[in-house]
Length: 405
Image 1 (cartoon, rainbow, N blue to C red):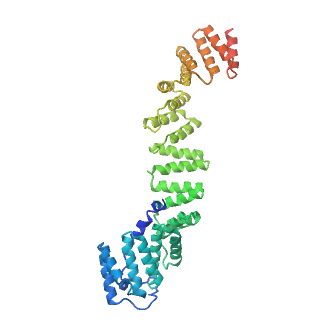
Image 2 (cartoon, rainbow, N blue to C red):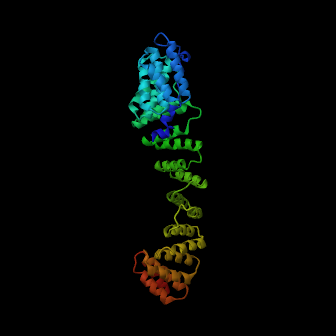
Image 3 (cartoon, rainbow, N blue to C red):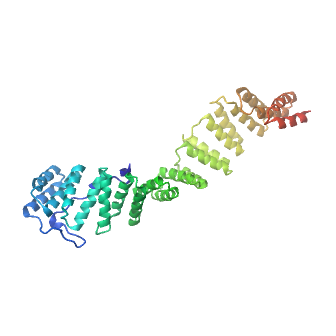
């Protein structure tokens, strides 16, 4: 997983070009070769021929030439041969052999300072690619500490990746932050790595800051918007969390019913039920919100609160086609009562009672009121007497009964 975040440690190791022969190497920090002498003409010709074969992707020929003279060299010559041989192996993804060759060159400590440091870094990269994280950390720490020139940002990211695999999250975070500060345009993958560390350390406010940076870099990434909303919710910034969801919804980024439900709840709580209804309807049209009886009732509830009764009625009728629940007919009756459609209300309430409702008393109370309004006083009295038997509707039912008397 970590190698995916940092862009592939193995690939990073492979982009290093083959070393130049001894005559072209120099130390940038003013430190020349640690051992006197250069290469013999014969060794120089073999190394040069091997490098040419390497440039032509003729790896077997390059390997053959270098292994043919490796055991006959020593000191500086031997370091050059094994350094070049390591690149031959690494270009073929033969990491174990490449590591052994590089380690042999390092052990001799015969190269000029900069090539020696480059070799140290490349070997550390190969250890990361080979998932030998302890060895990678050891070499990369040494490289960063000893390099005569400031280590590249990528070197810090490589070390961070190794730390993260060893669950040294704080150390990893420090290295990524250094990499980001070193680069005018940090890579998106580095911020992803930083985000992973903040998550592991449960630093959710910093997760939010990092996600804002990621959204700036990649505003079309839907996952970043969802993650930011979740993080803001985690740190109890509910309004900000929903605001992010609202922005994501405007861009068409919401792809989960739960996200639509969270945003709907916010709109209902803040007194904009019509916006809630339109949002929920949009989710249904896009196929994100299921057109189930339950969700259709949710839609009707929002429309009822918004006093959009025609839309609420249409939603409930669709829900009734999918469910035998008496609650659907009870809600339909409430719409009819709001519009003083008393006969339709009576029919819906009777159906609700026959199919079963949770609040029998209040349903009987509504039936009594509807019956009274069409002049069916005896029918109203019967329903009100039934309603008076339930604690939640007893008081209102008795008041209506007294009125009827």
